[in-house]
Amino acid sequence: MSRASGRAAKAAGDAWEAFVEAQHEAAKYLGVIVYVQHNEPGTKFVGGRLLHTKKSGTDFFGIMADGRAFATECKSTIGRLMRSDVQPKQVEQLDAVVKVGGEAWLLVEFRIGVEGYIRCAIPWKVAPWTKLRSADSISPDEMDPEWYIRPGVCYLKRGVAVPVGVGGRKRIFARE
Image 1: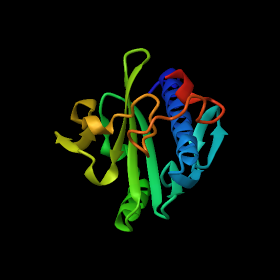
Image 2 (image 1 turned 120 degrees about the vertical axis):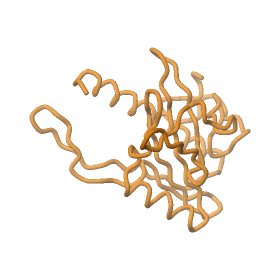
Image 3 (image 1 turned 90 degrees about the horizontal axis):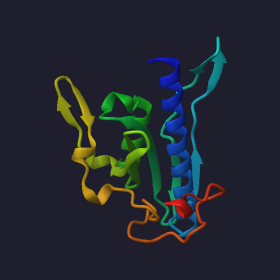
Image 4 (image 1 turned 180 degrees about the vertical axis):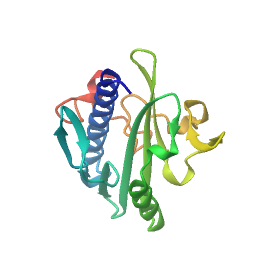
């Protein structure tokens, strides 16, 4: 991967996570969650390159208003999402949350064209991994329409519109 494409992928991933953070702020406002923590791996710059120094679990972990845990792993990709892109520690945490009755989500942004995307909130326990050749992956074509993250609606409280201006300082919901 060239440095330019690596920077573009990092920028897309950062923007996607900012959108998800705004979703969580809206979920707090709506009374769906009471706590959320954004987990990031340890990093340092070496020779002008960003290196991960510590593995992390899921991108977000929190507590829902009903006392259940939730975990969310965010991925932004062009084309198919490879299962190998979800690290073993992340799989372990998502599986554990499901096992104790919590909500575990794989949030995927499929980037299309210059500025297009399809955003989905896939329940982890039913993620539609498909084996092509020798590796499992997911494509936008395999998404259940219920999983689409619709503009102005919080993925944790489907069907409930979020008031304009809610969603943190970036006001994600006001623009969509």
